[in-house]
Amino acid sequence: MTELFNTLWQLVLNLRDLSGELIVLGLRYWLVLFWLAWSLWGINWQKCWPTLKAGAWAPVVLCLVVVALIWSQVEPYPCECLKLASVPNFWWQLGAVGLIASITLFCGWLQGYLGWTPAEISLDPPAHGHDHEHGHDHGHESTPSAGGHGH
Image (cartoon, one colour):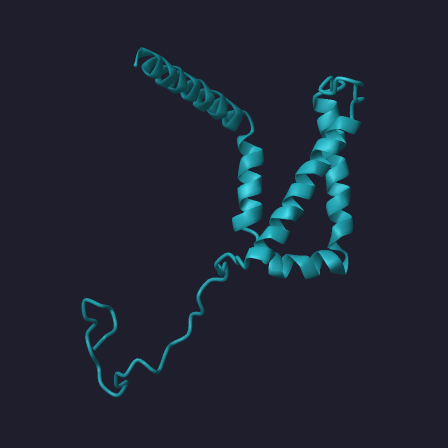
């Protein structure tokens, strides 16, 4: 019976360590996680795909290369992440940016495959017209009520 409690205690300690490491990882890569969540649930890919196909892919690729170039100047060191070889500066940043872009496009494909579409949000201000279908008579003077409709 003590072995069972020891095993359960080790499981609790391992889960604590795992959750701590996941929190540290999430805090380190919060911007990437936010971007991927936005890519999946915030972008309306039904509208985005035709725009990309019509030629918007070219400026997007240019932006990706510029981001990798800037990143290579901010962190100018080779990547020692591979056991077999060192990846030179700029090339590993370009690979990382390309990977994020690929996962972003995968999120768009996944949204279409699963039939998700984010809610449409209008950023246009409401029209300032007078609605004549609200049912009050304009022939007499009335004082505004608590609702502001002048009934």
